[in-house]
Length: 313
Image 1 (cartoon, one colour):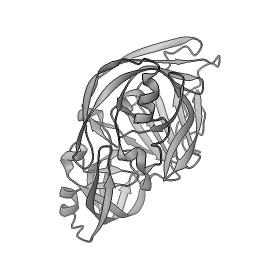
Image 2 (tube, one colour):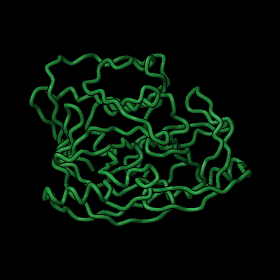
Image 3 (tube, rainbow, N blue to C red):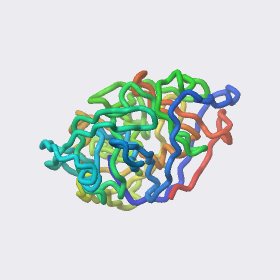
């Protein structure tokens, strides 16, 4: 959803549970793709199109549509174009879209009906973005510890075994939204976004946090998929609570974003949880079929009254 300069932060995870650690399931029947660690810590996977490639597509659970760079669209001869409006974290823009035949992720083949065409530099030099239209009814499992990503159904990925935290989410325009979370004691809706390096809050959330005397830690600038820059204040969220899990000291950018407006999330506190926070976990799974988000704590965490810290950057 957005591509940002990395903000180094001290973050902590706390959880309460007395269960013993369970072995991680072996998703032997699932599609496994090795994560590629690239600049800005983007989560990218290789895909092939029309038998050519592999090409580097970023996995973005916050993007509604699969996106292709203009260079790749021209190289592949994808000349049938239609107009559309592309919503980014900082802007809306008129773009062209194109169909993408024989789009292969591992052994799974798709036909992408209308992929927006953007400049490659606006998506960090990747060849495209793997959006929600390619991920519906699937589970995306990001194994940060082993640097692997799996895309398959929940059963093939071991079900819910091995996850300490399983959170029910609701669907809106293909997006999974966690409700019932609390930030500094304020009720907030949360989107888990693997395409955003940092976490981003809306202005309603900022207004309510000001009453709780959150402190400003500076500013940061983001560039969205349309190439538009947005500079916004960064404040520290003391504690984000999701079920019996909490993330402590989270830096959050606050901005008037078309993304919140498009999802109908402008009138109540909302937060996009970026990958800097997600990387604190051993694994995170976003299950679009079952409408769940699952978290696996690092093995170093003792699940009763314990905390971990990590420097991100």
